Image (cartoon, rainbow, N blue to C red; front, side, top):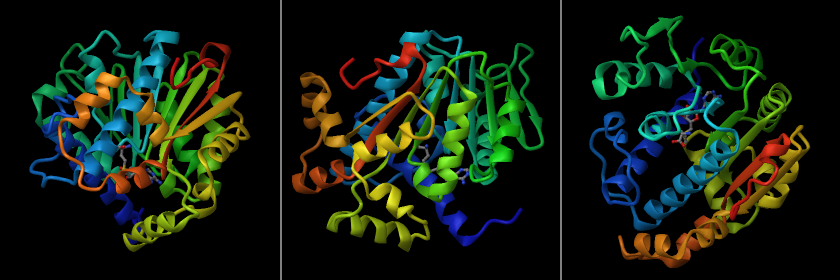
Length: 314
Ligand code: SAM
């Protein structure tokens, strides 16, 4: 299969995300011992960007831990559009390493990730089977409990086939992550994917982090910037408020869904946490951060009683 210029631009967003994460980690926003394997040198980003990434990563983490608290580690995590995310290795260093961790992205991204993993012992040793081996099959990496799969999320048949090959199924609770990914799918493709996942996993939680409120002036500029990079922005879907996004998710087959803009998420963090982060860098443009925060949202959708009480302040 050949990729369009549009796909290339979407693939490049991973480099951007990884660079921003590494920059924030170097400045002390949070700890990640693995991100530096995935991107070499990075230029310093604006304080507003670093702060935004902190809230994004911390918010995802809060809900990942809530999920694991409720169902334990005999579960599966499915990371959609995983990019160079390091969550698998970070969890491995805790008592919360999960039974099966499955990552999906375009083959152009997963093959690079695979290459980086194989080249770095610190990454590889946390993946390898007991015999120290990982298996590469049809370009995908498989091992006991970790699978890295190249596929196009817009092609549901391929997603289903890959998930089955990685041992995903309804037998265990599933946490599905979509961090800045669904924005790159047309609304009908994103809906079909989520509807399938909701139906396939009777006990699951879905975390979606992406843009919202794109209907206003600031939102228009964000849409223009994304389009200038060749990304299709699924306008109608993301124009809505966080509440509208949650409603949309609930309509796709989840029992319940809730969402917050990132300003609400930031304000929910413990005081000492915010104080620590605020002391790291002076903000040049407080207004810009407020605008950014009100144009990103975290949505949590769940199926199954044990996840029904997952909440920002649970
Ligand atoms: N989730 C990671 C994170 O937050 O650090 C990466 C985010 S990056 C902004 C978006 C990722 O989604 C890229 O790695 C891109 O290749 C992937 N992606 C977008 N559309 C996709 C598709 N149709 N199929 C597979 N992956 C896709």
